[in-house]
Image 1 (cartoon, rainbow, N blue to C red):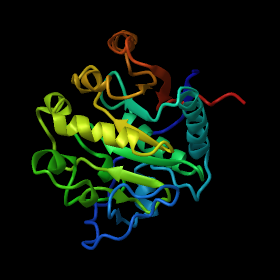
Image 2: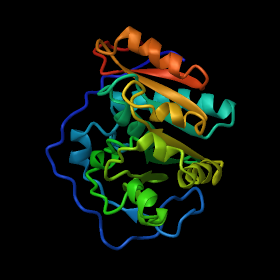
Image 3: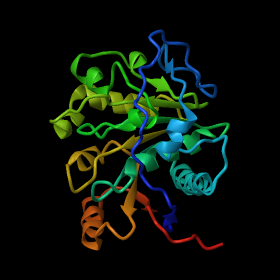
Amino acid sequence: MEYIINALQRAKGTIRPRKPPVRPVLNKETSEPSSYTLTRVFKTVPAYLHEKRVINPLTHSSIYDAYRLLRTHVLQRLREKNWTTLGVTSPAINSGKTLTAINLAISMAMEVNQTALLVDLDLRQPSIHDYFGYLPELGLSDYIQSESSLSEILFNPSLERLVVLPGRVPILNSSETLSTPRMVNLFAELKNRYQNRIVIFDLPPLLSADDALVFSSYVDAFLLVVEDNKTQIDDIARAKEMLKHANVIGNVLNKSTITARK
């Protein structure tokens, strides 16, 4: 898969996240039956999403077009193998892998017959909720540590066919946590519940923790995000060596100032 070049810049938001509504409402995923009883629907603020560089499907732009192209490449490769789970990672920190995972999930959910579940598995530094301006009362850490139900944790960010499983607070023993029976059962349920749903996992950088490596046996494929003019060639080589037994379907060159050729 060729590099997908986009000019995304991670931005620091100036608007503080808001607490979700206390009362959950019925699941809004329209292309599949709900696997859980209730899903919170959180009304996102377009200006906040813009500050965070989260794409808005209602506003067409070159960035949105780039993610649509990335979505097409990724879906083609997943569907060729009947794969439904994708891990998004990077060699080093601050490469933009979380934003890539978010925007890819949004673009996938824009397909009428496709639903997407975005899971924050960067357990030591969960941040997906912040990109939506959402302040979760419960997160994946609560599911793991206090056995909260998924129906209490999942939320829909006012986007059709997209559901998010946020992290909330850090988990220090993250790689050990990924191997617990409760998490293994969760991965199996998320992967096998619906054939028409793509599950995207935002994972920690490969060279900062062993989480992605531990998780490689539970995910069908990986997407590797590298930062233009910053990610070292040696780090990319080390990351690919670590994933040599996994299915790496492509690379995303992020934060590039190069104009894509027509």
